[in-house]
Image 1 (cartoon, rainbow, N blue to C red):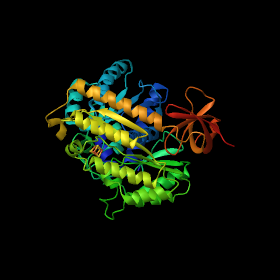
Image 2 (cartoon, rainbow, N blue to C red):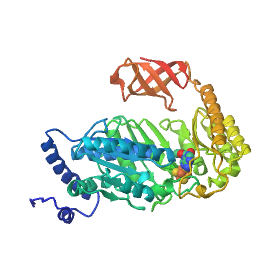
Image 3 (cartoon, rainbow, N blue to C red):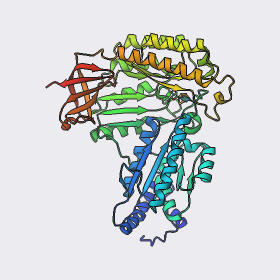
Image 4 (cartoon, protein in one colour):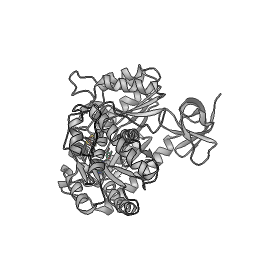
Length: 482
Ligand code: 5AD
Ligand code: SF4
């Protein structure tokens, strides 16, 4: 039926299919017509910019959001002074929130000079009711707010905004829905993140993620494998399987599948040469997983294994459900099976009640494990988490002093550990032209270490042999082997 659309949103809703992803396809088409009208009026294509904060989950979400915007007809630009500017926010630590508020003032000024500009906010920070209230009250320049559970609805929400001129707010408390098969725009042609699960059930006492990302939901293995097969057919050679706690993948599926089994199936996919995954919770890392990693040359010898603290007492209060000894024993088991593995970690300093003795336990684990690298964080109080209510918040100057000592130790060890493959020839995935010297390519070893080497851009996306000639801090300089 050829309908005369009259810009009445309710009329559109009547027409829109109920089921997904058809409903969003419908709204992509609808938004496209509206965007074309706007674009014709301006005499130029509409532009969009997505600014992503936080983790790999958010980066992957942004690729999906960009896929939808491009399908609507927006052209991506780097500059935030675009017709549609979206901030995909993070709230894991307070700093991330502060940065967004800071930038919103700047966006408001841009909008005054750029009539018709649409400012949108989504992601973890928007799942906090007090944040949305503050934005509604203080940042009226914002046009569209949505959360983590409904990013797939971007086309529908944007249509609503284009038709109504009012601020559109749609944030869900939770969901059990996973919408598959919407467009995605990959940042790299040869590597891609793949969500295998969403949410987290662990409730570590300092962490806001379970509250803003909801309960754990695993995608069906067939959907994941189909996506990876399609990626492989499209030239992708490396996938990063993404979840807050990949080691508990599949436990809640109707027909439970373990993460190790899923990994094994991914290794069977032709064209996929490298498989990474993130993040592993030490309490759920199985012997089966170590075996699968050991027996497949495609699975990269790298584990990101957040420690958080080396004190069993603090780990207990953090609700991490392992002790210092169990963590060390796990590391031993992993290293015995896969001696060349690269281990990285996350550590929090200044958790409530942390004493000097507790902190020294953390330093001790760092010294014993000798991580390839460690992300160190100062504890940040997140409203709504159990730790925010705990006594014994550590004074700022004490935390800062501990943090500096830890960082010095972590960096010393990283520089001692790096360089262990010096003078060997390794497989390197060439990823991009070096940003400082265009004669060089920048690539990664399978254990994630960076290598710069002279080479031509047509090697980008290919796995090549590179001799590692020199170690410079945390990266190598190398030469291509013919
Ligand atoms: N304060 C500081 N760091 C935190 N993380 C999570 N929550 C907090 C918090 N409240 C860190 C953890 C986690 C990483 C992604 O962020 O180390 O592994
Ligand atoms: Fe947060 Fe713990 Fe879940 Fe990681 S496992 S997202 S630290 S609650």
